[in-house]
Length: 274
Ligand SMILES: Nc1ncnc2c1ncn2[C@@H]1O[C@H](COP(=O)(O)OP(=O)(O)O)[C@@H](O)[C@H]1O
Ligand SMILES: [Mg+2]
Image (cartoon, rainbow, N blue to C red; front, side):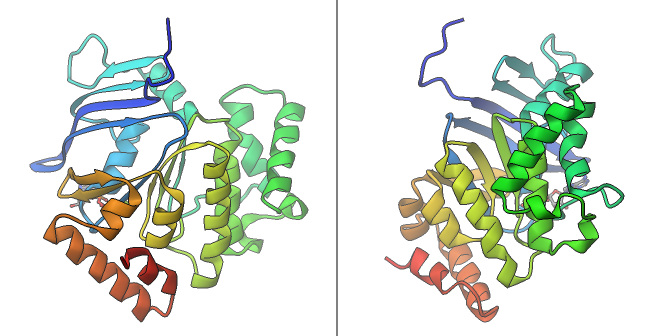
């Protein structure tokens, strides 16, 4: 197969997802190229998490087409290209996901957390998995904590380990869902710094965030979600500094107000200032 440079790494067409009568994702089209960093912003309940979760099939879309690496899926029930269980497992091992709650295994040490999936899912020899994990822990500055249990780590450290755990699978795409939202303000920076360094190294990333200044500085594109659709999609400077819809203007205004009220992120103010 001939792969051209311009071929997107991830291609989604008409992705839809309902929970009962509630349609949450209403026909999303999206192409993400290798190396792109796409930030998703939008009000609570607009479907951001459900969208990310349907990309690595934690939630299965009701209909829609997805292309990622060798996979070509058609989520419509009964389709010949409906993903099999095995394909879904493989897909999930190629797409890393990090959540707001770090979800580290409390009964495993930091190192054991990081080697778990490479050994269990990829079948890597333990020694090789340890080598990869130790290099990642060096990189995130937590090598010294490799034999500690998660409960001994700060929230920021745990979240960095969660990112290292995802990276240990050598994913082609990383999904981040509000990964700094549960952190104390003074711990947000260390996690964002790690994400920015991944972006700078060319990792393809889709992230849901309320960190407007981070979205402005690090992403190549920003999407504004509204009620299950992408209402705006463009360069950070256009979407964040020249929002077209009143809804986005209100959203940015509110987020700015909340952040200032919380005493944080004066930089957010700059991010939306013209
Ligand atoms: N598993 C689920 N079952 C039923 N409703 C859900 C489920 N997950 C999400 N929802 C609903 O879908 C809507 C979008 O949720 P979500 O994707 O979490 O939005 P966001 O991440 O933008 O806040 C909300 O109304 C939420 O209550
Ligand atoms: Mg969410």
